[in-house]
Length: 266
Image (cartoon, rainbow, N blue to C red; front, side, top):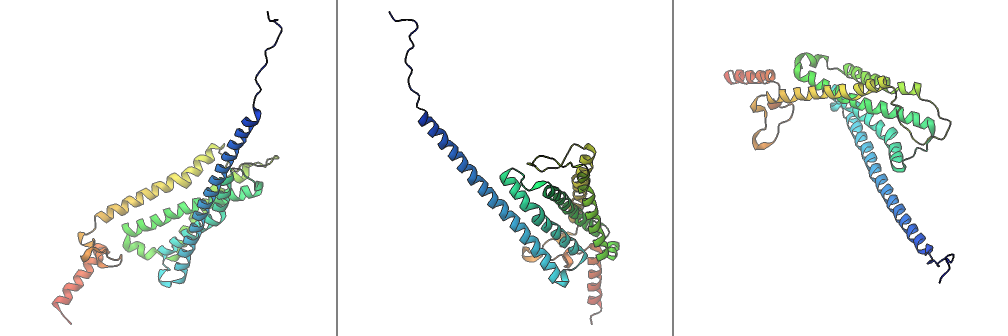
């Protein structure tokens, strides 16, 4: 009989192979993560570069051609400048932060980056509203607004957009606390409910409502135009300044002049 106190021998565990498999899987995951980060960095960098170059081309085109220096194009150039600032001040740091998922640039750069992000992005949205309002007034009150559509008025509209954008970006700087430990994340403090409501309405909801109303007006006015204003022969669209796309009262003047010339030829 076997004694009850005798311990049966156990099979040896092959820890070497298990650790090798674990290390191999860790290396594969790390390699996949590195490939993903590199791919993401390249794609976002290309988008940033394309944004910078395209807006720079718009600014250069309008600044070099005097024929394009009109109040309407002034608003477009100002929008291009705003988007250029976004691509220079905001997007490169955003690419870095998105790829590594950790903030490594310190508190001061974080505050500057957040302020630039909120200010420039809000100003860009408000520029779209300004352009939409300019288009709305040009359609609904063409005769009177053509007299008021000056470079000074366009500059005033741009200045108003920037003032609103700055007023939305400044409040977080007053209650942001400097942390003693190392900063690993950079984001806007959303604990203040009144600021959250104020900023979202000022930067998104109200501009969206203005854009929606102006676009609906453009579409409605476009559908009410004379059928003769659609394409000319051959299916090609006419230029915006051609008689086919002119306002009804302007087309009436052209038609009246044509009748007079037919009755009283020179």
